[in-house]
Length: 130
Image (cartoon, rainbow, N blue to C red; front, side, top):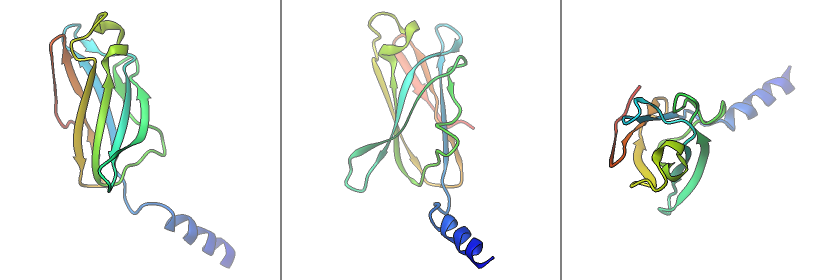
């Protein structure tokens, strides 16, 4: 019993106290549909001010990344979602915005952050969703 208690305490101490969940999606206004197959990278700003890769993904058939993995949880900090629009099949041969970067802050490590990109051929917008 004592060994199992020690193992449990060690396992709990290696986990962050709280970590946020991040999701995203691409909504293509020109098509009126989700942007399927868009590769993206999630970056986290380090204490030295450099960007470090935190996760990668590709949007599903609905244009969503619902999760960056079951164990992917993110501590408070500054993050950047980088959408590779040049690889989006419906963007045309040379999209005006070949890359879209959205920088945001995770301040509540227990919260869910949904940060989508709403795109059109010559513009995009974003917001914090749910």
